[in-house]
Image (tube, rainbow, N blue to C red; front, top):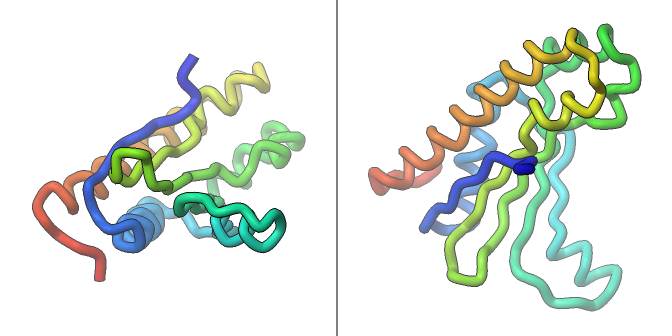
Length: 139
């Protein structure tokens, strides 16, 4: 079972993070957190790792709707999008598949929300792919 929506991009890491952040905002998401895993592991464990960021994305109206239908849904929020350096040098952007995520609740009231967020994440990844396929960079 696939639990993410993923794409690979040949572009500078920081440019991809900026493009993902902008595309998320364009789809109505704010970032509740931005975790720099590389820095955290270096500080806490003195371990060197490739660059890896976890972006905690939230669309407040959809979150409110979901929490109204399923109060425990908060345990699954925010929806995470990760950006990391792959071994081959590509930058991977991987978003949780919200349809899989809300599916574990077995609450049919969440199906439309999961589908909506899934479509928004697909558009985010498509926008980022398109931006770098045409040679564009983030502002």
